[in-house]
Image (cartoon, rainbow, N blue to C red; front, side, top):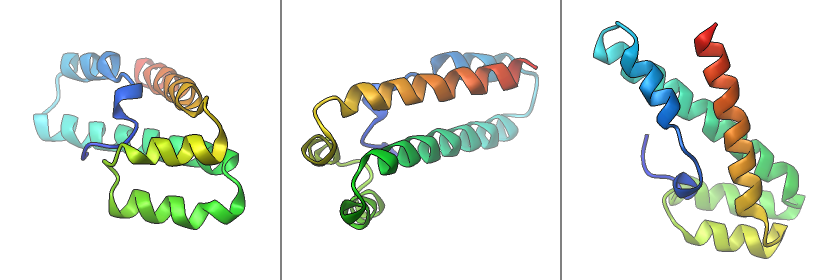
Length: 106
């Protein structure tokens, strides 16, 4: 997946290590990693939309759609949700990563 505005806040290294250890074709591992990226993306966007007031949803989603890499998205979120949004994204990502690791381990 492309670089996203929150990438500096999350770590998927444990998931990547787990996938690397699985004996599967590289293209299958790539597909799995893409699905994992999608799950994390959807979870973080959902959490942000829950914290962002309704009138700001369209603007936020438009910016993410047009420039998902833009670090100014964090500034926008701080302005409209509060200064702790980076911590909230980090916590949500950690929760999602743990859930994925649990599912991969099963």
